[in-house]
Amino acid sequence: MTNKQQASGMKVVIADDHPLFRTALSNAVYQSLEEPRLITVGSFDELEAILKTDGDADLLLLDLNMPGARGYSALVHARSVVPALPVIVVSAYEEASVVRASLDHGASGFIPKSSSPETMAKAIAAVLDGETWAPLETLGSANVDREFTDKLASLTPQQQRVLVMLTDGLLNKQIAIDLAISEATVKAHITAILRKLGVHTRTQAVIAARSLEIDWTRYGRGSPGAPGE
Image 1 (cartoon, rainbow, N blue to C red):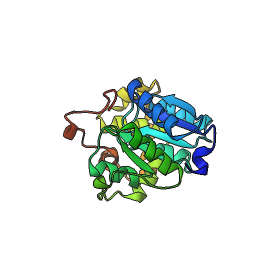
Image 2 (cartoon, helix red, strand yellow; image 1 turned 60 degrees about the vertical axis):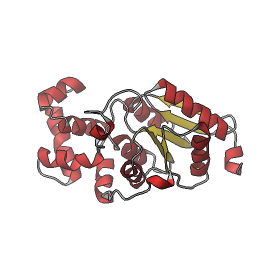
Image 3 (cartoon, one colour; image 1 turned 90 degrees about the vertical axis):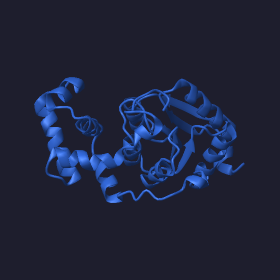
Image 4 (cartoon, helix red, strand yellow; image 1 turned 45 degrees about the vertical axis):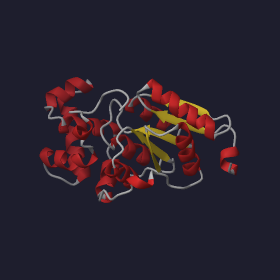
């Protein structure tokens, strides 16, 4: 056990909407660290609030697909809010392209949800020691556009929500109703999104945003959002 692992009271944030996986990750953290302080959240909004108030956390264990997030959007946001915070993606989507894209979007590690508690603990220990951890057999190339990732990271959480809704084909009126804001505010968000992404139309923004998404149909699903994924 390294000196860092021996440090008592390290703060670890677990962001996963499924209680069983939160428990499994909590057990892995307890196996890796001495008297850790755990904070658990189950949605993007809860994670956003924690990142603002607990920016001194030592580690974030992040499910790729929580309510309010899409693909790699929560990862990009977390890395933009607290750049020094190590993030380990924990996901049921274990293809090499997903692992590689997670690392290219700024994750320090990737733990498949099928991993044993011992493997999870090993990954946590490695990342806290400053290493990058992922299953060797999954490391391929995802060709992520890092410049575009930086542009996505510049979006505010509300702008990210609007962009996700645009990719779902929602009209301004529908977005306004879902977010409880005015249509004028939606239009202002869209204008800011276009400017930050360096595109000229909402169609171009939607096409560009697809780089954040995962091909959910490969896993027998038509759309994201099911608990525990």
